[in-house]
Amino acid sequence: HSSSTETVEMEPDGLILIGREDDIKKSRRTTAKVNGREVVVFYHEGKFHAMDSRCYLTYHFFFFFLQDINGQACIICPWHKYKITLETGEGLYEGRNPLEPSPTPQWLSIGVKQRIHKVTIDNGNVYVSPPDLSVSFDSDYFADKHRNSGDLAM
Image (cartoon, rainbow, N blue to C red; front, side, top):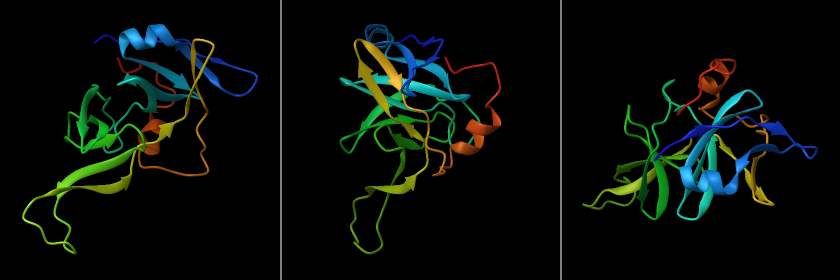
């Protein structure tokens, strides 16, 4: 799939215009700066999702490997193979819960690691809400570190 980088505009209600709905549906994803943060917007299985574009564990860009895991759409970081849910930003791993002994590994959460951004669709446009920085996530470290860089994930 292809990707594009959009020029963003702040709307009067504080939402940030990312691009046209049809364009993002065709490309399946786009990247943009939202209040200086690198954000990737995905269109996957009929829904739009947005998250910080750099992995929470390393500074590397996501390369957009998507997979459904246990009924949840996830992105997979190519560097450490962690799975991050598009819906919540939770990190998933396959393991055994010591409180529920089972010979079969289960998908377990390591908690919310990646900042998720709210997506709004209005009149054929895709908008992202500015992040609520009163709550911090692991991905904030690299999002802030690369805040003023000119390069965006492709």
